Length: 459
Ligand SMILES: Nc1nc2c(ncn2[C@@H]2O[C@H](COP(=O)(O)OP(=O)(O)OP(=O)(O)O)[C@@H](O)[C@H]2O)c(=O)[nH]1
Ligand SMILES: [Mg+2]
Image (cartoon, rainbow, N blue to C red; front, side):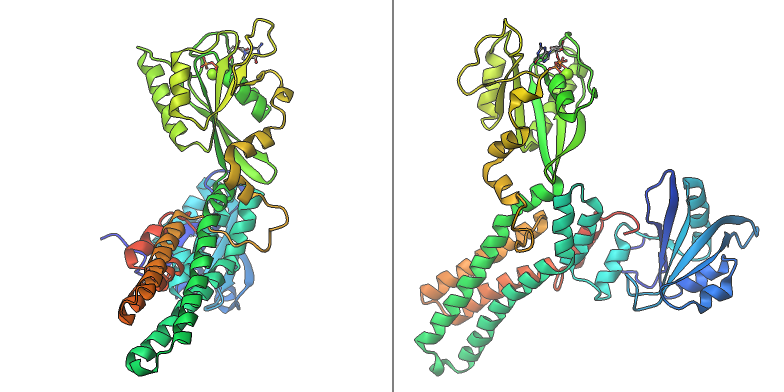
């Protein structure tokens, strides 16, 4: 039977750095007897066994069966509970080739370590009470941060800003619940000033929840970056624009329609945002199956795009396919390309005349993106509000916050309608439970498995 996150007695090991070539690699272990197991294949076993926490020991890893030396390493010892997982742990810094890391891992497996599941170290930190679920998710977000904005927000969540805000909101609810329970026990004591106070507390909780929910589109953009998709009929100049924006001759440009068959992407940064720019296959009805697949992929990307740049060749003009595209994607930015050529026709209204050969014809690309994204990018802007703002970036958190908000709204409605106090309490409890699921206090096992399985191996 395969292991699960809940088999916490097993000692685990994983490569914590990417596979491939690098100066060093880090192999991470954790478990009650982690130090003892590593010592069996370490050239200085006594030094390792006697090492205090946070001490590094130099030595060789060898295969205890063949006695073959595998690599010269530094082993860093952690003693429970002062480690990331809260368990005893050894982190081995070895040379960074796949061959070295693989041999060391194989020897550690034969000595008793199990291969860790994705995010299993973080899961153990969570299960051992070292972190809540929001902070654990922030660790994963930090490992994925692709720009300054993403790093900043993830670190803020890791330092507990969001967890504390959620705790505050939950305390408001618990405050009301405690009062209501007392009233249920002594109904004759209820006075109007008391219900006013409950309504005020619930209103505050609801406002705080609304603020967090509103922060999601901006938080998500900051975390995941913007997806900008360039689309248009064949030969409109999409690949030329792509190359211009990424400042590199990445995509093949040619006068032959149908040059780009599959999409191509590159990351650029604008301010402290990461922007993923995608060049797509020209949109047209075609009998060619490879090109048709390219067109299908273009539409799949368009469905997820934050910004669509739709290009038309201004020397050719609009046709029915362009018009139906604009009707299908009304938020697309409409670009009338090849404006540098004298035979380019005047741009119709709503279309901006540009040249994919000249970046200056776009004005500021950043302000163009900003105007396309209106409120979310405005909210996601960084300056000034860096420290004050608490944002969420995960769909899971957003969904639970919406549920919590809905339940509080129902509690307030029940209160206003003069419904029984037990019904009001039921809705408040439901709301508080949603918050508990966000922080992991009451998250079911399958929710935890789903969250941690998206983490990197070795994290
Ligand atoms: N003068 C001028 N030529 C352009 C401009 N944009 C693209 N071209 C030319 O138009 C032709 C097609 O450009 P591409 O960038 O390959 O067009 P595409 O939309 O990627 O085409 P497909 O990949 O076939 O769908 C090439 O010869 C480019 O040099 C422009 O703004 N001005
Ligand atoms: Mg192309």
